[in-house]
Image (tube, rainbow over all chains, first blue to last red; front, side, top):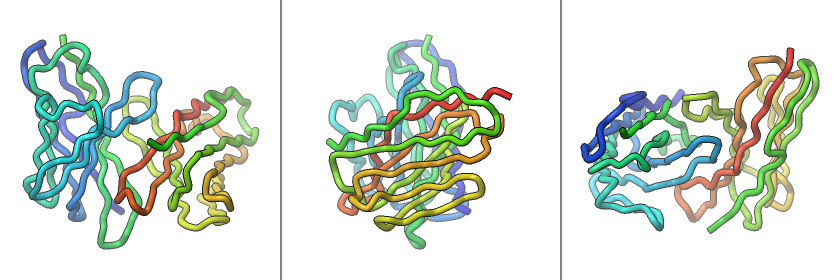
Length: 116
Length: 112
């Protein structure tokens, strides 16, 4: 079945630094991947849609210059949190689907970001 | 944007009991999905529903796509301790690509 791998699973960084999170589709190609953010005891909120070979589409209220998304290949999308602040601490989750078989979205295991 | 109302917000049950949770929407969805999330992990797909009225089972789990296409329910029969977790419904519009709208989640606790 479709497997989505996310790395790192956990990261702690200092305020002002940047952090890159990778999302890979392991056994399928994904022209589109999605990045979600989840705060404690809350649901998943879509941040942006990552499109291979073109610019990402950001949801309303999500700063594109702060959350840089790059989807340079059909199996890899990266989310870079730039100049991170404590309020950026959250659980970031990516998802993708194998469009060849019209399968539902599968999610990575998430990245717990803590900004100190 | 679309809103999904999921209920109940939390449930505390005894092992062996059956569980039911549901989601309703003001919008019509083309696909309903049910996910389970364990602490510190990403959501795992449980059941996918593609047609109005569809009833699908996955082991002790059964889910249905409402006839109106605005609701779905998930039932868990004979619950066991490992059923503990947060269950999310998600709806997908045909016109939204693969973008999902998530419910608020149902926190399930199973007492042995």
